[in-house]
Image (cartoon, rainbow, N blue to C red):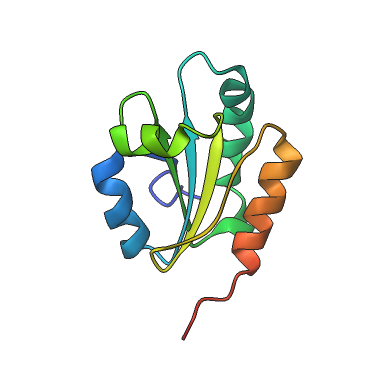
Length: 117
């Protein structure tokens, strides 16, 4: 795969997240927080998901909840890292996950999700 064709995790903010979820069929978002050990532990696997050919067509985004008031409000009742799956601009699934296997399972459900026609 050429460097230009290679996908990457998109760092975004509250304002752009909504636009991205409507511009892309499927979006997998990671809400993180500073000084979060689980966030740091899951950063390398999250970055690797982007390169997996099975995940072609899924946009991977990351939000720092400390810098984004809407994300911070969403996280008030949850712990970071918080993963959210979107399809066609609609929230499909969201959960606070701390194990790589849990994140993979949520990502597999997003891959298998069939959008409305």
